[in-house]
Length: 77
Image 1: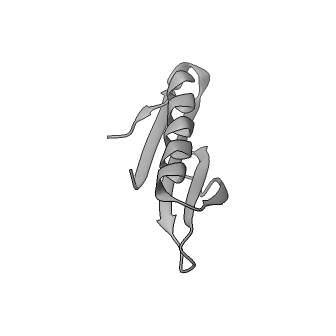
Image 2: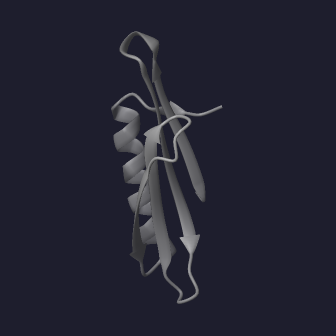
């Protein structure tokens, strides 16, 4: 997984949200999990965390995606 984009759209609640999780390798050998979320069409907010290995970063990213899917987010596209 390098980038996962999720949407949650509910016109009855005037809800149009996105959630993006991306894995990025930095220059120091760390793997960064960057999360970005907000209303579709906006820049949104973001948070990053670094991990020493790709496997630990992928595990964290997968857990974040599963948590959002339980809340009603679905893969965009």
